[in-house]
Image: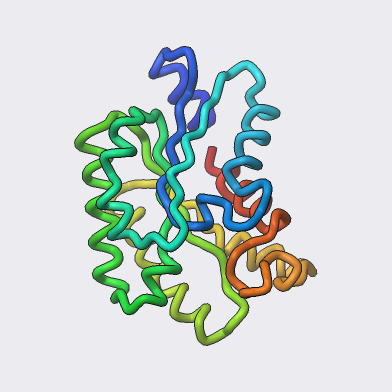
Length: 198
């Protein structure tokens, strides 16, 4: 049984509601289709019998602390599934990895206490600079630890990308000129990494 179909049966609602809280990668920065658009299409193909709605609460520039400040938006949406994606802005605005993890944990606790939603954590993408990517991955490690601590599945987007890159896809073909934000091809890979867990 898939997570989506299992939750759909348990909730017995007319529509299955997904709310995604995150930064510009959740928002879909400077593209016509972000990962949530692709994920919606993929879910509709995989589960044509289900009515699935996706609420995009991605805000460019947001850190996990900002996400925590906006947590009431998630609670008001009353989702069946909450996807949480932060890290890169935290990593490059002076936040320590352990403080970042505390903010992610607070988001998780609020979703768990104030909604009946299941939670899915996401890592973000590998960035083009090896030095900066090492920093980013120290934050992704905290997301993975948080998933382990709270028994929450983690879509390891950065590892999925690295697998595709080792298979011959050029990293530069997946990102915009800043070496960080995905182009549509990269967002599609993000959606594929999420779909694997759904």
